[in-house]
Image 1 (tube, rainbow, N blue to C red):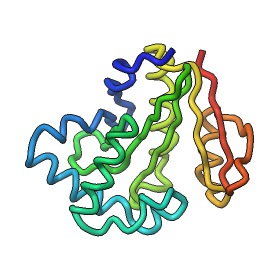
Image 2 (image 1 turned 90 degrees about the vertical axis):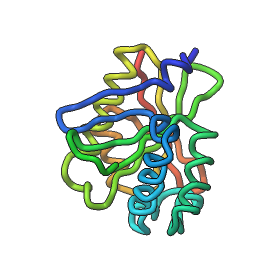
Image 3 (image 1 turned 135 degrees about the vertical axis):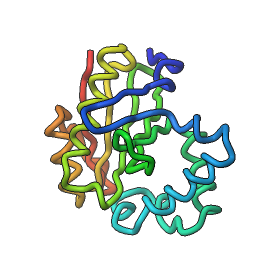
Image 4 (image 1 turned 30 degrees about the vertical axis):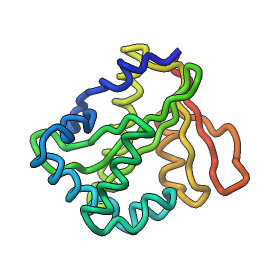
Length: 176
């Protein structure tokens, strides 16, 4: 069984990254405004290209707030920052299942691509989940055209399990 309170409190650092729940941004009006502005910057057309429709056309802070409310109501949402720097460079989403499985989503700002942040982020997440016995299995869905994301999941230990029929391939990583 997933330990929801632990899953919600995931926070970890890697060599270059800091990952924490976005709840800390939501308690302060100033931080929330900063978060909304960063969401608009992050969700560029290139970043959102292979993501579900509700990630597209986030062009204003109002759009970002609608997206943010959807994300925090449906998942545990975590910000990704470079150590010692303010702007958020990405997000991790964990959706709980009924059993010991969580569904994983992630994205990085286009300016952070091809620098090793994706693998560093996912290796750190897997280590945190294992060390704290948070879930037994993570599942990530990747658009069939998103070869880079598929290779990234395979690099960190995920295995392709099935194609959904709607252009998404599911990968899973058993942690227990």
